[in-house]
Length: 521
Image 1 (cartoon, rainbow, N blue to C red):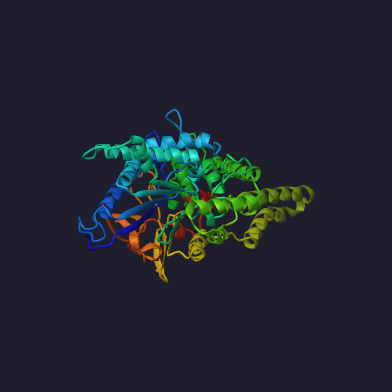
Image 2: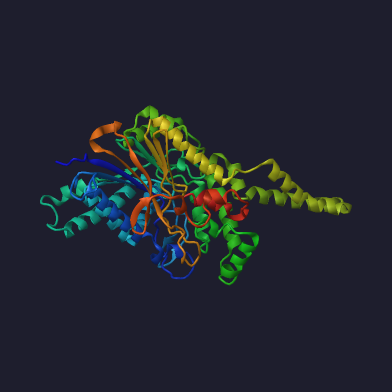
């Protein structure tokens, strides 16, 4: 009998942003091309994780072997269904309805393009462990039963293949019973996951106005079969996807100086037949139009049904779920003035009004040329001073603060978010607060020769499996570097400025919506 008690391991990663692979080999959307996918890195980490768990709590190889349990939580934005589809061997920008009819083929195509990732997840399940997919703002379609079935089927197929290749082959018995047992180990959560030892895992987009849903369990608009688009989703599809010479996973790739944008346009767009300005202008305008057109006010009955559905799916007490939901940010469609400001539509409109007013002054008062010329810039300066806009740093602080409130609502011993791409981990008063950072294809340069990440983050918490809800937790933020797990270090942060750091300095306004909406993923 082992001297070590069996342990339960909760491991969370997020924000991989797997999408259909770009079929070309040029600089356009290079970050989406197969050679730059993080699949192999993730698979190596998951295989190492299986080995560590198999060693048991004592880490001695045999003691506790096969007794420890692992729950791998893929904490949102694992898939990116807002990225372009590949049709006829070409990446096609789209804003297809967010329905099962369109989401299932897109998800199946992503899974086919990333067999290494799927196989690695299948091996986790084949070992007898559990995998939980939590929906994020870019893979909110994981709330649809048809999409869940497609993902589950793919993972079970991979687990069956893994078992068939092991010594002894498939276990004796019915194949259908085995598939059902494997499928039971692949779970889905529309909003958050709650473990039996007091850990709450949630993507975190519900505290971000640009990426939150009014009803996260059933995020539909007026058409109950179609998911309501957020500002972040619309910006990603209608604006960011049309700018393939930027890497949407790296802020510094598009937060350039005025001269930097001019140089970027000259180098990549001048002779390409593509328009950077038109892509932004049309995308921003269409985003606003779609938000207004699809606006769907809150309804109390739907909200109550949503809370009840969350209780059933997670097992969390209904009063705790109610407190949790009160923390949500207001969707951007309820704050259209803020949307206009983020997309610079307000400034453009005010400038147009100022120019028209100046022309009118010149027509009616020819002698007032100087005053008329100053009218438009004066209006813009006055507006900027009177209506300040929140910094991106303030948005991230709001998300982080929400984690503390979520812990109080559930009496949780740990709360883990993703979404911000900023890895974090700290113990405060015996409660762990963490952020799973990102595993996306992030590179400092457009040619994808210099990876941003020196290390990849994951949150790894442990508790005694037999101790029940009162089991104390241990662990925290860990990094995967040099093909092994290591304690997280401050110097493991990306070598280029991240979101919270970039937000503190002046930024070119023209592309800031990308950072605040689509790149919050």
